[in-house]
Length: 279
View 1 (tube, rainbow, N blue to C red):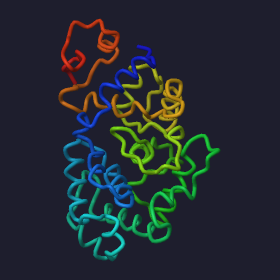
View 2: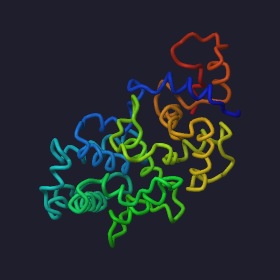
View 3: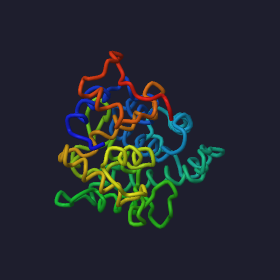
C-alpha cells in the first residue's frame, strides 16, 4: 500500500491523544513541569525503552523512584559513589546496575559543565545542518567522555539510534502527546526513532524497501515522511506505533484496513478501525 497525506493526517487526528499513550514511557515526562527534570527523565526513560513495554515502565519507574521529586536536584547533590550504591541490584534485560549508574553519572557531569542537557546538545547543533546527526554525535561524545556508555549507541557505527531519536522527539516536538521543551531545535531536523516494529510498518506503507532497521533506513523513512510533513517528519511516529503496542489497537494490516476506514467506506461504526486481532 502507498501511504498518502490524507490517510496520515486522519490517523494523526484520531489517535494523537493522551488517552492513547499508555503503555508508553513518555508518560513519565508528564509528571515533570520543570524542564531541567523533564529532560533527564526523558533520557533515562528512552534509554531503557527496549524489550517488553511492561518491563520498560517497571524499570523506568524503579529508577525514577530513587531520584526523589527532582531528578535534577538528585544528580546535582548526590555523589558518584552514592549513585552507584543507590542502584545496586538494578537490572533491565541487558542493562545492569553499573550501566544505569554510568549513564546517571554522565548526565551529572554534563549538567555540571553545561548547566543542562539541552545546552550540551545545542553546543553541537547548527541550523544549517540537514538533520540532528552531527549534534547527536557530539552530544553522545560529551556524555560518554572517555567511557563507552552501553545505553548510548553512537550513530557513526550505523545504529538507527532509536532510543536517542525517541528522546529527541519527546523533547523537541510539542503537541498533545510530545511535551517538548527544547525550543531551539527545529522538528524538521529530527529522525524517525526506528525499531523493528516501525520498520515493519514502514515496509507495509511503502516508505522503504530496505531490509535492515539501521541508520540508513531511518534516514530513508524520514525522507519519505518529509514528503507529507517537511517541517515535522516524525509527526506520525507516535500514532503509527500505537498499533501493536496497545491491546485495543492490536497489530494491524494497515494496508488492508486503513483504506476502507480512512475513506469512510467501512460499515464498522466502532471508535476504532477494523484492524485484525492477530499479531
